[in-house]
Image (cartoon, rainbow, N blue to C red; front, side, top):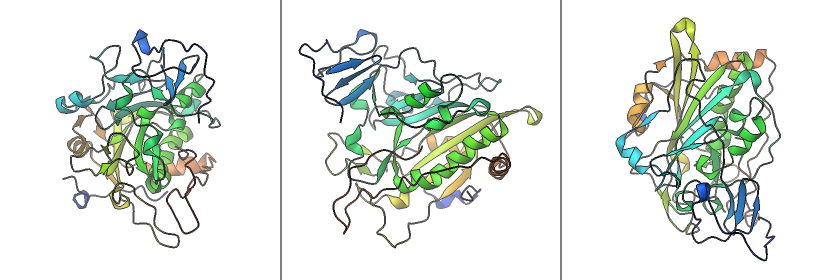
Amino acid sequence: MNVLRANSNLRQYALPKQRSEESPTPPTPVGPAGTAVENMTIIRQDGESYFTHEGKFNTFPGRDGYDPSFLGDELPMPSLSPRLRQQAAPLLADPTKIELTYTHFSVIQHAERAMPMLTAVNIDGASYQEIDRSDSWAFDARIAREHQMGKEAYKKNDIDRGHMVRRKEAQWGPDAGKAGGDTFTYPNAGLQHSDLNQKSWLDLENNILFGAVAKKEKKTVFTGPILRDSDPTFDNNGLMKRATQIPTAFWKVQVWNNEEAGGLQAQAFVISQEDLIKGEAPARPLPGTTPPPLKVYQVEMEKLEEMTDIDFGPLTDAPDRTESDKKAIADAGIVIDDKPWLKRKTPSAAGPPAEPSRSPED
């Protein structure tokens, strides 16, 4: 996990099949708080979820979301600039609100790009639970379908449904299973190239999460894409009804409370996938070739705020702790078993691509 390192030369990176158990008399389509689901017929309902021909929708009732007092000192959700705030997808039940609350985490969705602009998760390393993955992706019924990308964005390419809030990050405490399941919602998915999502990004996630587990500490993690007007257009070769833009980089901030050092401290990271994105359907390098290098940077909070147009509040930049976390993970005897999820999804000489089965361990 030596990919995590400081790099002061930041200027080199350009800142600049559901079952069809159709009922003879389908119920009236309803969304959260009784709002109508336009142009959809509900095929069946299952608790807080319902199914249409577009897939699974979840209403996510009773979720508390991100807890700003989780670390002891108050840490509100980061503040979007007025420009970003106007671009956020409104809740159908109350258009004045934009925060989608889940178990242990929250998401703010970008309406036009149909992907998250900001996620916030609380992590309790002392009560972390390892749970087998067995969930399916769902749309969030609390915002418009047009503000969410479904599986049409991930077919026959090397783009993963990259969890912005990692499943394992939310899996702690009595509601660990419910929290992990909540991460499989499309507003929590970013357009990440598989060679980013399953390599350097995963290394970063592992170091942050299992560092907290090894030290039995609490952390808060903020994550999102760097959104630039110059980002490439993406419509998955026409498979998507509405084109979006694919980010060329993603950021992540970990926060913890160090009372001896004066309270809340933070580390921010930016990882680029710019070299991996080629056109509208990025492809993994051919067998036998070397992938382009992935750029991993630790950045100052002030610099990240400039890059994202997001205000993270009075967080203090902390000394690099990636090596100490790595040592704590080893000393605790934690074995990180990252299964080889990499599967070629683009055409090759061996024949047509296999249908993508799942996103990687994220």
